[in-house]
Length: 521
Image (cartoon, rainbow, N blue to C red; front, side, top):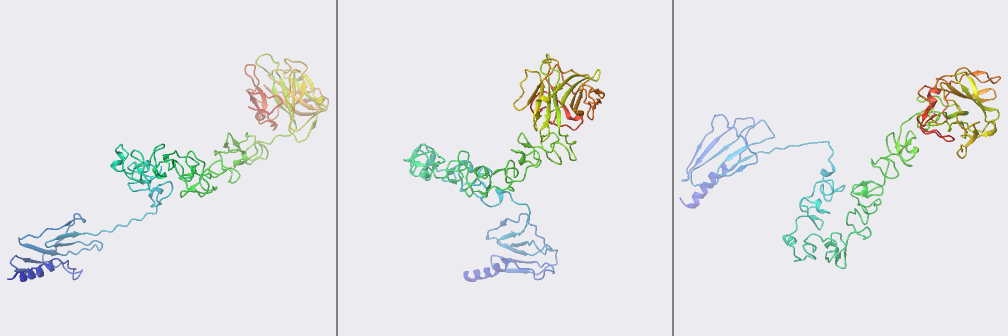
């Protein structure tokens, strides 16, 4: 047989074996045929069999195996196996080449929003897509960078991540370098005071008289820590709206949106603009709730800013807020509002040493002057219910709204604006209780009263038309609320000027006596 005939016969034999026939009927039996060829060109074909179809198991769907032809006899087998899984197809052909192939399709759906470092966009303070900057992972070689730490290799050359050539690490000035191992476009930029030819040769991007100069906030280029030209970073002024930014701290507004400084709003979840806390306070936003920062009472929903923190409604904060009908009074939460008039506001009847600093303070809590004509202060001895002293205060004339009157020894100097009436003596002018009391009288009217260190309910005023009165207003003052000869203290109305006709709640102890001025704890 000629070589041409031999080759032609061999080709006709191999061609069907290299094909992967599709099943004639997906519901039919598997048809398996085997053909054998020998090197002398003869061919023997076996007909279909009724044996159980062969199942092909794929161990690794990605592996393709090819056996090279040899001069030994070769057996070619084609097997087709029916499967009920329409998404997976396995075909096995064994000729001079055997290939296993499996195709798998997997679809995953999620409704979770990607974070900024994985959203496939260059945004925020990233130097390249989803990498670089202070937040995301460093960029691989070839990524855009600003500083070495933006790169996996810790090397940023001409704003591109990548290690420099070996010549840039040899400690010599060679090739295109403008100074030793720096500048020239191929090596890292040069530090300040090194030689340069163009701005790009310098880390600062400022080349003056062929020397790299430190970055500044007036050099009209973006360098150093700046996010835009001469602004942003830790040392330069804040950037204005529209400038590039790496974070809110770069912007005057405090808002960096998609790397651009943007106007502050009351809904941007940042403390910016004139806000005193995040999205509240200041002249433009709603008042802040309790616990948030403030500067004035107007910054707070409850109109109470204490130590630069908004405080909730309190019946002792000195402010009319919440449901109060007056300052710290009225409404569903606080006690009754004080009765306006001339009141006994503070008394210091016992001192640590000799009782030489005693005083009684009166206060006009009304909005109009009060004529003091026919006004007296009676000091009542609790042991016999009779006055032991009567102090005429009519000579003081009129007491103005919110004005104080102090009864004290002659040597006491009243604060500016306060009226002054002298005791008859300078020491031991007020008895120390158990009990004793004070009655403020106008003509035949009991204006105000206080019984301390016990109740006095049958005080004899010796005033015709007034007679016997009780010095207890509401609930008697508790025994633990009393002056002391071992500690500096006085009895005061707190809040200042608060008279609800209930001694037990109106009067408190103060460690800071304030004759002629507002009471403090």
